[in-house]
Length: 309
Image 1 (tube, helix red, strand yellow):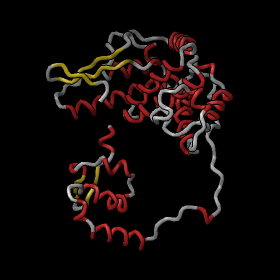
Image 2 (cartoon, one colour; image 1 turned 180 degrees about the vertical axis):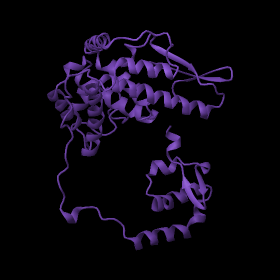
Image 3 (spheres, rainbow, N blue to C red; image 1 turned 45 degrees about the vertical axis):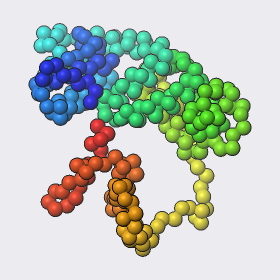
Image 4 (tube, rainbow, N blue to C red; image 1 turned 90 degrees about the vertical axis):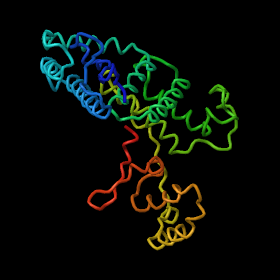
């Protein structure tokens, strides 16, 4: 887990203070002993501290609490010293305004790194999610450029959407396009382009980032509104039909008769059964281990999200 460090046998919590709390805090980083040598206990306590810092930052930014209240909560948690002087509301507001002015001139590449760390620290993202969003953001920088946050308008993001519609899938990994500049790729003829859902996936990543900038008052308004593309409605006879209960039973019965053919890959045999009875996604099922399945009061349960924390 992020923000954990071990000194001797004891775990410590160490992280950068959220920007909107730095105006109240005497240091850029906090470090606090978690008074435990057990990693699982340390992770739980660190997660609680993370949540508290993010919540205080959010409440202070939206003026839901006064600066003095935030300082008192930080003191109670042991994150700042008891001798820290209380800051007046006016002084805190002035510092927040100044902070926003300074951040408005920062390049979005710098702001995106702060956004990514915020999402990882709060548990909203795992490393895989961060990597996917980074790839999406890198494509935006390639297409539009790295500028201060106020540079981007709704039209510039619409232009980015138009670029996405002209790109082939796997543009960075396909042997045909890997290593080529975006301008060269756009001039090439492609037999297959990004699907509507793939284009929207990029746009969701970008919209979420600019929404974060707006929520944190780094930009005055979110330019990434109404970017998603809607799919044309299909005729009822073109819609994908679901399997009937009898069809599902027939498939599982046939699969059961072929169990021996899986050989050493018995774990694959259970995937469709778990999917049929749990409704879980393929990626969730395939990351399960034996110790993730257990019984409580005679009923079987599975812990799917533990691997993502």
